[in-house]
Image (cartoon, rainbow, N blue to C red; front, side):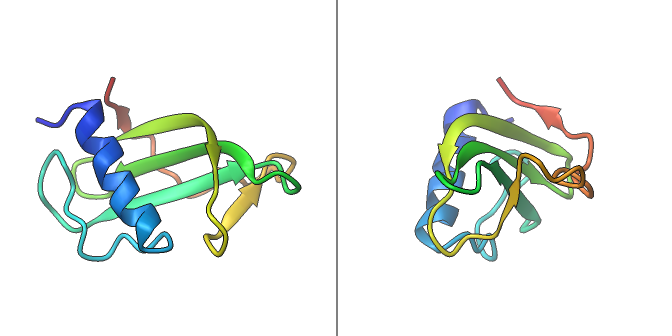
Length: 92
């Protein structure tokens, strides 16, 4: 079972790789099915990130996160910003 620091470490690894989750195992189940979604203000690129595993459906959300350059984002004003994000269990 992963804790929040484990998830944050995995998120940092993915961020260092320009948002590519391939090859970064889930901190909870170990599978290679991590996904993330940045929902941000279009000017500042600050908002929140949803980060989850498609296999075990656990993950975290991080507020006040800045999306790195080059990482795909959705904007706050987009009604479909969280479309396709599963209802995953948030780790504290």
